[in-house]
Image 1 (cartoon, one colour):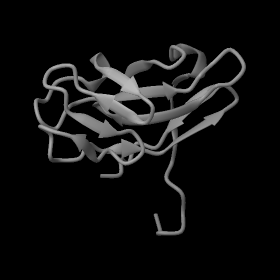
Image 2 (cartoon, helix red, strand yellow):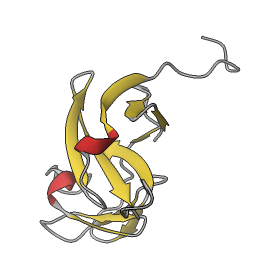
Image 3 (cartoon, helix red, strand yellow):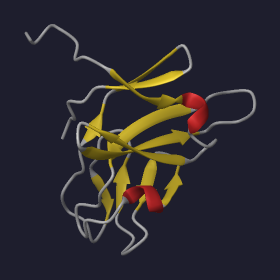
Image 4 (cartoon, helix red, strand yellow):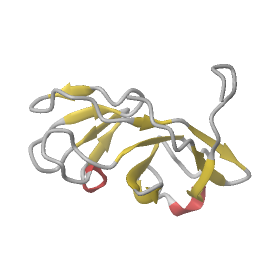
Length: 117
């Protein structure tokens, strides 16, 4: 694939599978991925993000943590990560978590299996 081509996307789930302003853990190419829906209300779908479902500090699932705006917080030690970039925004984590490009088509959530670090 050349640098100008867009990555392939695969269906991860239906948008309706993700709770409003919630998290759904799915397996994508043998990796656990947390699909996060933020800002969803009855009138709007909100935004959807995909981030590797593990904390770079303690290797526990981020999908079991909390979401606040564009931040997901690990339930174990409170590390926080930006859903848009995967970069840590709160200690004790210092290493980023890979994020995946996402698009919505016809009610389906499609994710590129090639993460960005």
